[in-house]
Image (cartoon, rainbow, N blue to C red; front, side, top):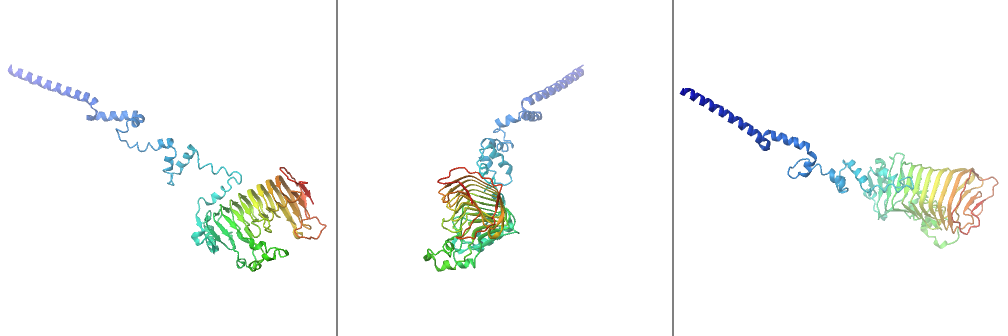
Length: 475
């Protein structure tokens, strides 16, 4: 009996122990739900909660849990809110180019308005055609090639070397720096083998030599650009022809002012050079520069196509002989606008072989006005077509606008329009003139053959004509 009792007690003890162990397990399970750090289920629950409240929990409780996402998320946020600081920090690095495009769009676009204004000419006058030629190319400073810029030393070789380097590179810039004066002799920047789109950035001053030896027996041009494509000359610099050496000596038949001659003037060649000439070139831009005191023509385009001239200043005394402002010959598709011309001859001279010439918003004076011709000299054939001159101011000029042909010549002048020409203090009684008996000498032989024919000549005049008996005459 005792043995049965002991066995029953032992069995009861075992049952009690088993019951206690199950209660501990349950308690541990219950406590695991509340004490998350102690049990593995707690970590899984935390992960689930983190996924469901990902957006808000990181922003509000980011300080308590340092997450690697925090340093990445702020840049996009401030980029939209604070605007210019954040985009400009990465901008020095070339790769993040795309980030720079949206930032100006979101801002006021302080850099973008600059290209649109030049809508008057070429759509980017000066600026849109020239910039593509240099934005990605190298810059060749003439000083780096040995130019002194003191106005006395001969810098011709330095200019030649800089040009040769730019020629090989293409889409590059020849820089003439500001605040320096460069003495440059007769030079030709030529190049059928030059790569296109070269920018000649003129910020300083280029001086012509005044000694007779530099010109030899006589040259037709001083600075010449030949057989180039996409050439642009722009800047705020000056080309000074110092033509006073020729002006007094240029008329040997004039008996007046003999005392003004000196030995140096007598040694100067009678052939006078044009200051700046372009020959056989296409897509040429001349913008912003100043040309003064040329010995003859200031700017000449010969056998060129696609020419744009704007914001140019040309200046020489009104008594400087044969100093045309802009001379066009055998050239097509030429646009000249927003330019100031003061010289001793025609402000703009349009010669044979020219077509599609568009001139507007030009100030002319003093000078001889704007002329087509003289055409047909020495019994030659001459043709000019499709010329428009409008919105021009003439002040203290000899004539206004005119067409002049020599006797004995043959040819055709057609599709010419003069519109809104305003004149003041013009010397002739007729500011618009067609002269078929042109003569630049005191006496010309009268010839019976007509010097030219005017067909399909349309003309419009408007504006202010001061003290003129008749606005138009034909001879």
